[in-house]
Image 1: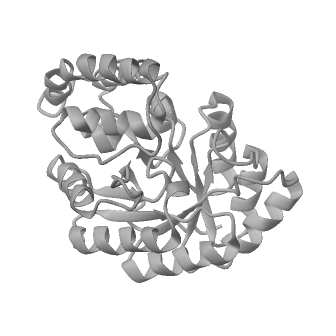
Image 2: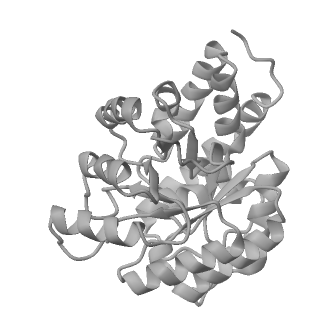
Length: 310
């Protein structure tokens, strides 16, 4: 089958957090600063409105405005993927149209999250809706946040629905990597890894790139890892992955989107208010992480200038 992967759908896409004001609306000035932060550090891809963006906390119109503002700010300096998750197909279609109007190269479509739909119902939903959207679709496999479609069903949709061109796998499953690699023998697909602890392995198992929350706060960790792997510089890649694994270990007890915001705060960026107040235990964990992270930034930045070793 002819490969359906759009040009530009590869490399590192940073999953952008959404800064919120006190009223729960996006803080537009803070969002603009986050975009500039990533572009200034070499990011060539951004993903808007995904789990790191806390899409469940934003309205359809707010997300459409995020798409419009970011793509206008980027002005072609980076490729854009727009996530369109919702609990209603009408809202998914509104978001997908907005993504197309803004020049996104692909849509990220997660399963519904709220009601206990059956597996075959989920497959039917995703096939019908994904097949009818105006841009190429990546299935967003993130069972820890949505209903679990199952990797076998995801791969079945990629193989049978022409508009569904691949997936972002954020399951954290090594078994999934093996199944995806096997499926790629017969079915060219756009495989983007969403589990940062599996980046090294995923790129060795056919991943085109990554859609990474950590890249939004630490592009100095994700970009050099991707570049080293592309160049076959395995020693450098393993060294960066080891640092990345340590970062992931340090945020293990924090809500993932909030951890990115805590890291960005250390780097001097305004990330707005949290969706919910922190209790004393979580606050202490956040402070411990920020203190640790502040000491790591010089080492991370060294990866962007160090010569890669074979």
